[in-house]
Image 1 (spheres, each protein chain N blue to C red):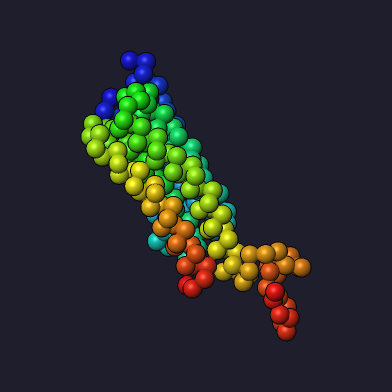
Image 2 (cartoon, each protein chain N blue to C red):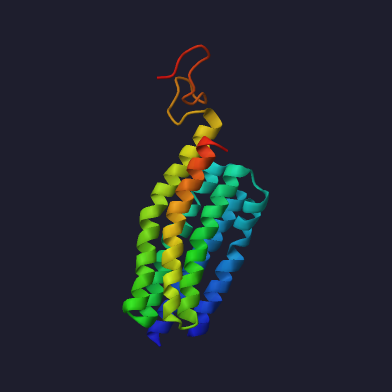
Length: 115
Length: 84
């Protein structure tokens, strides 16, 4: 009985995290700000779900696969966020590197050759 | 107890609606962020349904989707960065 209560609480927390993050994705102004709200749903939520599965069913081969999925998400999440923010910056400023002037990005001034 | 996992999966599907609105109505890069969000949530939903319906073989689906989320997402954003 205690296991079931703990699993239910963990699942409720996971749903709350996902709901809050989803609203955050909706209300933030631009893609850079929205991207911050993907991380709770991609890391905290899966962690709570996997924990709830282990609490309820214990650790065996099949539930271990959910741990593998969590591992992939923990590894992939930061890489994917970095690649996404880099793509956003390249699309906005032409280059991901910091330019001389704020807001200029890495785009070389007219007539100047990029290295 | 099984119903708790199914109910959590349904609640997460409902919680995806705001991100789905961004995916449908937002600009291109916001839609990409919405896509990444939805993919991450679907991984959880698949794990919850596998546990909720007591189908151990279905635990492979979230693993595969988590792998594809990484590879597909990277290819997608690199294509957006360079060509689209």
